[in-house]
Every structure is written in C-alpha cells, then in structure tokens.
Length: 117
Image (cartoon, rainbow, N blue to C red; front, side, top):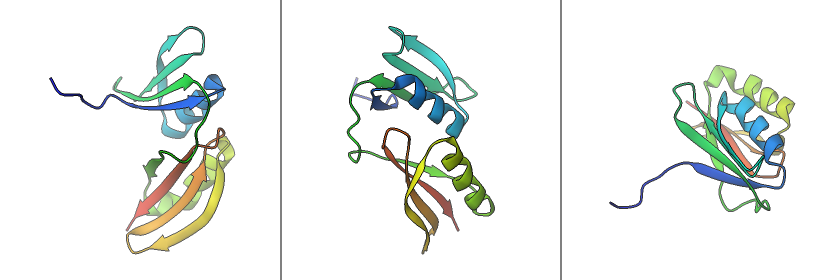
C-alpha cells in the first residue's frame, strides 16, 4: 500500500499551550496523548484526527495552515483568533478570490484565514 496522508503535525516546545490554542481555534478536542505532553492529537466532532502537536523546536515558515470562514464572519473570526493568542503578520487584504489575512499562532507557526467570495 502506498503512503497516505494522516494529519498535520506541528512541533512545539510548549505542546499543551499550542494544542489548547488550535483546539479552541478549530473547535477540536484531544483524543490522544503520549508521554505527558510529548505527543497530542486533536480531532473534530466526528472523531477524525486532524492535527498533531509534538514536542520539538518550532521551525516557522516551512508549512502553514489555511483556514476558511464565511465572508460576513471574516473580521469577527480574525478578532477571535487574535483573542486566542494569534498575531497578525500582514494586514487583511482583498484579493480576486476574496479576503485573506496572514497570522501566526503562539509558537510562530504561520497560518492564513481566507473568506472566499
């Protein structure tokens, strides 16, 4: 059998805090934990594994997540994510496909929030 996609994993020196941020940001919940806080897996409401956080050094910039929301919720969602601990890297802007803002999570991992037109 060929390799298949499992989940996105973020390295972090503070796995508990980063997992808590992404759980709140994406409405996920913890379904797996190994060796205290060395490895944490977050799943959606149906139990599908979506995001892993493992102990390690952050190497920001090599991969980023794209999040999406409804256009009429864009500003509210940016504010919610910033309230959870994200930081805006580049101000929100309009592109031909819709609105986008570039952010980083509390560990400096980049991610985008998009609202497609």
